[in-house]
Length: 150
Image 1: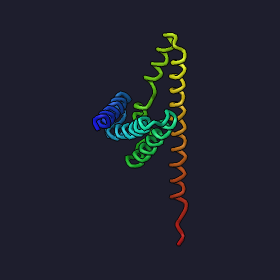
Image 2: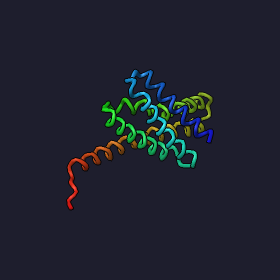
Image 3: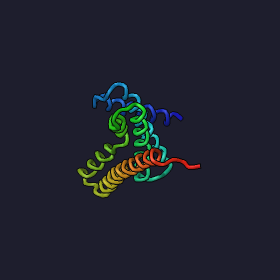
Image 4: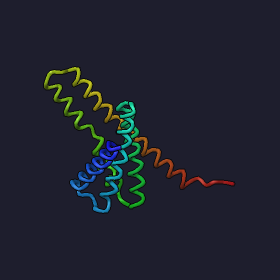
């Protein structure tokens, strides 16, 4: 239980701090933190349950994108205001750093695994973004253009 709370708090704080650094509107900072926390918790839960980096990244970016889209519609602000700070907890920066560190220490097998995990995470995030954008826009189109006939 403590681990869940720690992950929630620090993912929220990391998203908020990046939002402050990026100078987003003040009204959107706490919501951006919640969006980031939502995405990180999805990633963390799936990765602790044994799912791979790729699937965890896809699900995480889907959660992020849906939460960002809904927040952008509610608060009538651009999607990037909520989405970019929310991406900060899942960007594989420490994994890339460790892979480069292993590369400089001439541990080529460890470095290769690290770079593959960074690539899987990046591709998973991109796929999740594209899929969520397509699903959200197509669902909005269907809601606006189709009427229920009784």
